[in-house]
Length: 344
Ligand code: UDP
Image (tube, rainbow, N blue to C red; front, side, top):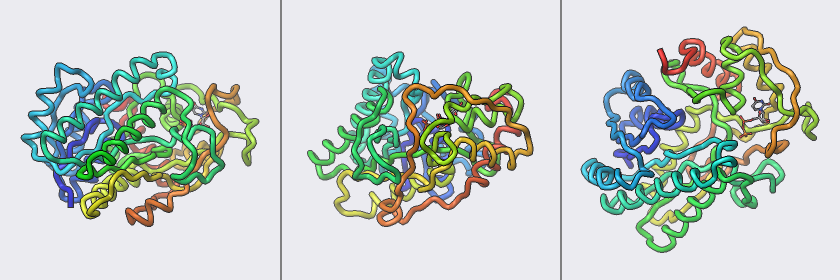
């Protein structure tokens, strides 16, 4: 199976867990990261957890000045393919600075494609997002659902998916999996790697975790008047280790299928969880209070979305197995043992 893998953004939250999963499966990784939103310490921790099989190239895939160096390093690594996670990912920021989002996320992908062409390794597992569905579908949503992202970040994900689809249509040597992530949470059970957002977290779980550890005073629940079972927003939270295993399953699938072309898979747990349910579960796992208050809805939020993950189960032989309690316990272990993330 595919064993030598370029991991762009491999020091980030999801990337670090993908590296661990790859190494545990006997593979090797070349991480390409500029540490714009990640820490070199993650690489040390990956080595502690899973051995020395992850090399690092510190470079910016979106910077034309780095392209030649990246292409040379990728060729020298002799990869089987790539997991492509590098990119900007904050929804709100993308609304305020759309051109920055397009001018990072798209060119980073162009450079990766050129490098893989040069290395004759035409295989990409791409980090897409359920945000491509926007609010057009009733849940559970499957991969035939209508797409219509509601912000520039989501549009970069959709455009890259479409570009990779075109690439596979134009040249049958390309093998592509677009993985549409639902809401990744949790951490490796070692507590050594996890999510370490820059500044105040936007996402629910890192925010709850920082309240539980005393770094933030209280959580704002963005709306309790949605048409959901308790009025709060419902999402499909998936343990980041399950998500990471989905990438290895996707690489195995692409390596084993003769003509997979470009494929798209939801990676979710297939279960909707409300904000109040998430808070209650985190409280149980951490044994800490999570002070919270009801606040107005957040602009651009939708009431409910969760996955129908059957296609991944059928074709990749993958499904999420970890529970909400596992997600909370592992997220809490990371947060409580590293209250300031990777900073000392
Ligand atoms: N949420 C919240 N308070 C926060 C952050 C998020 O109530 O501080 C809610 C949000 O409205 C949504 C859910 O938690 O219903 C998940 O939000 P997140 O930003 O983590 O993921 P996304 O909305 O991108 O799916």
